[in-house]
Image (cartoon, rainbow, N blue to C red; front, side, top):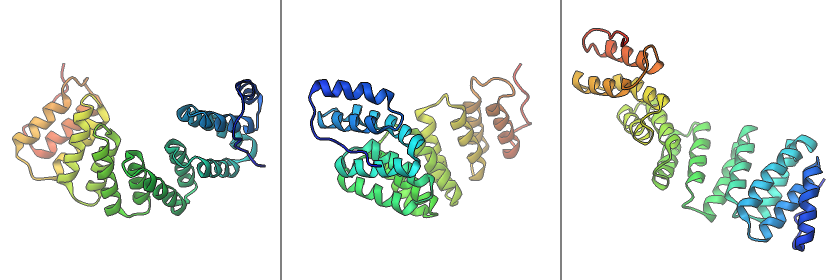
Length: 241
């Protein structure tokens, strides 16, 4: 079953296609509508419509047909970054990592400054066990996207896993600076602190900053208690009243 991407239709036909796509369980009409939107320069709307249509294609004809549909779409619209990342995600889910890597490399050749491509590349390298390459790709993504929290968190985890704890603290600290109220990011920062030599005063300051405004018996407070005992800074703390 093919999902053609037509060239031009008039506005009335576009409206008819939109009505048909809402009733078509196969997703064929939805893909055709996405093509028409793209031809009219509405790339974001086209990408959103394609994603919705692909859900119907997968449910009606299977995941392989949805993936083939994405491949055909990118052959016609190689600059659709969102759809390219969607294809990479589908390929990675079925462990086709080489195909996913090739798809991302094509994207990077077209848009070398697109941060999400570098982020995806780092994730693929990590899945392949290429930790050095993963770190370099994620660093590039972090440089291109200064407000990207998860990229910095992944760098912190990677550096910790390969034994570079000071770098892990640096990247967990950058993530925490972007979202200082995040409980998860506080925990990430707390659990990596005892792995490096530090003065009791440094650890105590980090502990106090991390438990600020936390409720008694919260995971963050418990982690802070563990950190204080681990670093032997005074007695283990009692939950606040």
